[in-house]
Length: 443
Image (cartoon, rainbow, N blue to C red):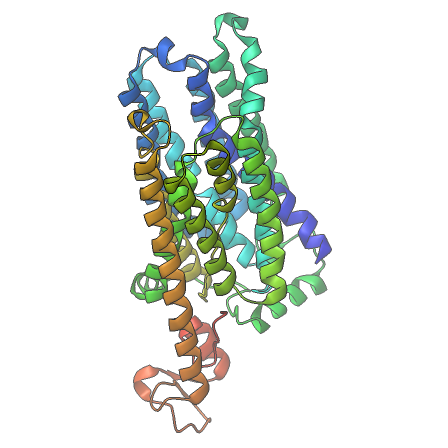
């Protein structure tokens, strides 16, 4: 497992750091006179920010399916190459139309990384191991948030070199580094456990079997069928997960960056890793999720009610983190559910990136109120998901009449043909995924 950790997590964390750094660089470029040089108004700048989120959100579900079909090393490297090129071209853009077009392309290309990586990691780790690894991976975003301003300040010193302003060099240098990492990713990233070259044959079999023992029956791979996409759309867990991600991503994209945010992001980095390990050790997700959303509610209530700068700044520390873990089996279905949930969450970034208006200075109570509503939606969705999963587990334990599938050669008073007829338990597990009567949800 240490071998897997070193081959999987650090490189993914670097890719996500670049993902988060590149999308946020436009804010730093604005500080160094980008809008003045391109002759664009504040309204046009906000439109350029908003345009990013629509392809970013809508392309996430199909991107995740493409990742499973085309292999992670190929797909993730390709989309990273595209966004690296788009990022670099930001540095040579000369007008508003060009900026909007590049923001659209950047959103389209960046869309697949985050949901793709989360799905990819579920194929390597058991459910009670995933939180700590995702925590380490996701902490790279908080590192990017903390130091993007410092990096931009350093790069801006190149103002005038090659006839380019300092803000252009921010885009060019960060974009070129992303392109280099994209090319390297094709050779560094492994695909799935059953084909990983850094593992021996015995290790590959061991990883696949332990995933199957953790109720990830598709760990050895499965052929694509369109029905998996329809299953994801019809699953009530998908829609609650969308509410949870909405509550998480709305506040995330509303965050403004400046030097005061550096300690907040550093605190967020520490908390992300601690919460990830805590969730795995406690083997629970719901209560961790509810506690973190509750801290966010408290933080934003303070922000709305306070007129004290020190108290308001402290409240941001309480509002920095939240996380959710999906209970979905079947690798294609899991990829589609993650894509839809994360995509919907990110689509709300188009709203929350515009809620902190200049006219609301200095306390921004309208923006804080909207973000508070998002967090409340996340909290309620988490609570509903917990109780519904708990109820479903209890029903499966009791063996409610006529809810189980028919397995040939196995007598069962709770089975009914309408739930499917299968030649073996293994066939039922593979076909039905988390709908199989023996599957138990993680609470």
